[in-house]
Length: 87
Image (cartoon, rainbow, N blue to C red; front, side, top):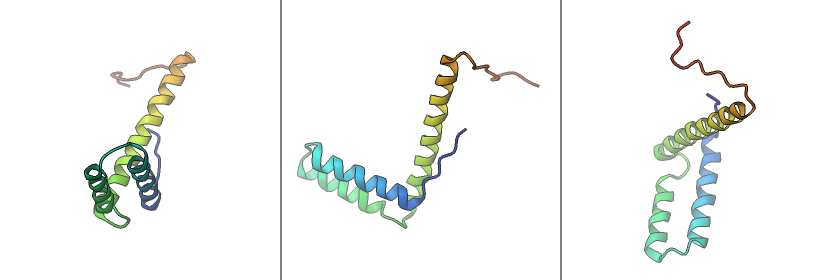
């Protein structure tokens, strides 16, 4: 598996950017905006929630990179599966 390493500050910046874009551009109502702001505040830099989210982001990004690499290799005809084989 490919491993992506986002530092907590990087992940926090990404979350802040995404939530801000959603709040500003998604056309959601005041109640929805308030809930998003609360969610973002609960995941501020230095919190356990942000550390957990950073770990989850790193894992998901790594899996996505692996999957795209597998698809590219299969498309190029170089993929040989070793799943289920014992050596």
